[in-house]
Length: 178
Image (cartoon, rainbow, N blue to C red; front, side):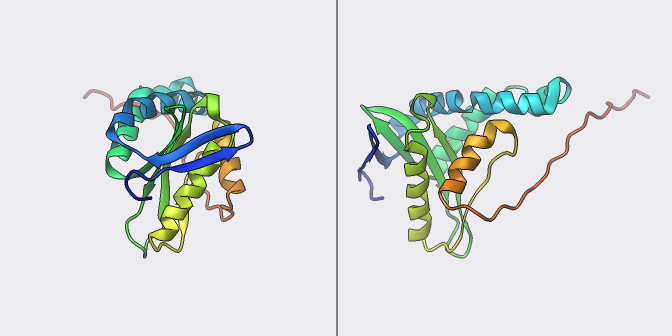
C-alpha cells in the first residue's frame, strides 16, 4: 500500500478503511490490542494454572504493549479505522521473497470483532506478502480456547497447513543454598 493510500471496506453494515499505520496511531493500537488480548491471556492463565502463569507472564499487559510498540515501529503495519478511531491492526514481517511472509501480529477491538475487520486485515496482509514476492504466508496462534477465534479466522482465510508446536511447562525448584 503506498504511503497515505486508503482502502475503503464495507462488510455488512460496517464501513471502515484500511490505511498505513502512522506514529500518531500508536496509543489507540496499544489500547485496542490490550482489550482484544485480555480474554486470550485469561485463557492462557487458566491453561497454565496459578503456579506457572505468574512466572511465564508476570505482567502480560506490559510485555504485550512493548511487543505492539516494537512491531508497529519495525514492521509493515496497517490499521483499520472507523469514524477516525482505530479498530484493528496487522503487522507483517517480510524478510525477503525467499522466506515466508509472516502475519506477525493482528488484533481487532472487541467492539468491532466478528464484523469483517479481521478478515479484511488478514486479506490485506496476504496481498502485501504476495506483492513482496513471497510464495508462502505463515501466521502463528495459540492452541488454547482463548485463541479459537483467531484459528477460525485464519482457517476461513485459507490457512490449511497446520504444524503444531507443543510447549510443555512445569515448575522447577530453585537451587538450594549451599
